Image (cartoon, rainbow, N blue to C red):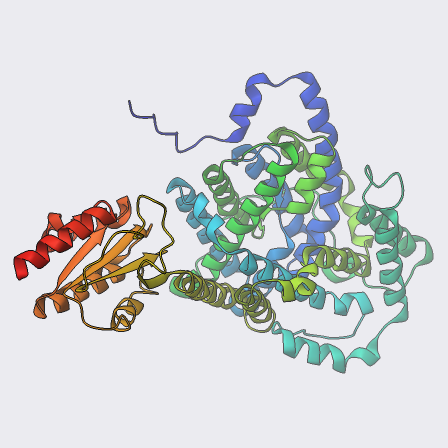
Length: 558
């Protein structure tokens, strides 16, 4: 009886509401309000660091957060703008403009939906750990570099997007440092760091306290520092109307690569966050539905002037620690942000940019996987190379290039490891390692017969070693027996090598006998017609049958 297929669209909230209670709502309400307050400074800071207005981050947190919680595949995922997108959005704005950023985000949303409906959520999990940690640490460095100007109050008209050029320009303008701005940034940073040690940190995060301190310092002491109001003006007290972006003169084909980058990063970040949340609440998310929810959010958020969104690990963790257990807490988080905008938007113009830069400095530090740098000597050398290559390329070149090169390096080094672990050796009584049933000990082997064993995967990484091993076998035998009992996988290249060997043996009037092939290698050889060419009698179940067949062939030949 076949198992019924799962529906393509199955938001997690539908499952959670089946046995929802008043107690659940109280927990979700408390958690949602808490995480909404936490999200406010982060949403504005990420938007400003990305090169957009602060309200773009708030609108994204409200709309995308609501859609991701309502339509996603995780119980407690909190969606919104994240640090991972800062560098990407900044570069797209610099290269293509705001309209094309909206188009890229919508294209990425469509890609995410296609990935979800095609059930490709599990594929993202195959991206190697050194690659994800490498670009995450690289993004953390880039986020930190974007905050130097506002943290120190440097008088720079335009900061380049490229890291090395950016650092050169910032270094040239260090003499323009403003001590009031730097002092406020340092004070805000210390508040965030030391507030964690207080008993109130679980309820009121340090970033909110730093935001309150910085805003009051500007209002009471009239400090001459740059604020949201002086740079961006007032924040609107309502969500803007939905508006389709106008197609510009830029060819859509040029926007495919940045759109793919947004989609790939959104998928990776959201599923990583969902996995972390699963571990905290002992649950299992639906990765395909999560991609669909993320896709819908990124498809619709640009219509209100938003930026790319994904699952936010820090806010999701705050949600769980505050008692959130269903998507309702994420919806409450969005409504909390909406109420703040409606009631307190005019106060936002007094928030100093130095304080927001301190918030992002902490985010960048927490985001980076710095402990991995000290562990690199203990890692396999191949993993260390992949990690460092991805990290350096993310910082110096581009995230897309870093992921592409990291994946290629990881694949090549993985193939090498598989090839190195595969052994092709000549077997006799002295070198026998098999158990009683498959052992050669006490079983006479005719002089005209040589036996070889393949251990491991027989793929394109090791196919060329087959003939090398046979050539090193000494005198030329009349029959070659290849023991395949420990070959679990064979690809087309391995099959081609075996076919090439068989053809050479036929020309020399020699014979090939295969012993104990597993299901996958045997199926591969049968589909290709190789077993029919070799002859079913020459594919034996064990070494005893193979030796008996060898004697029969030798008798027939003589």
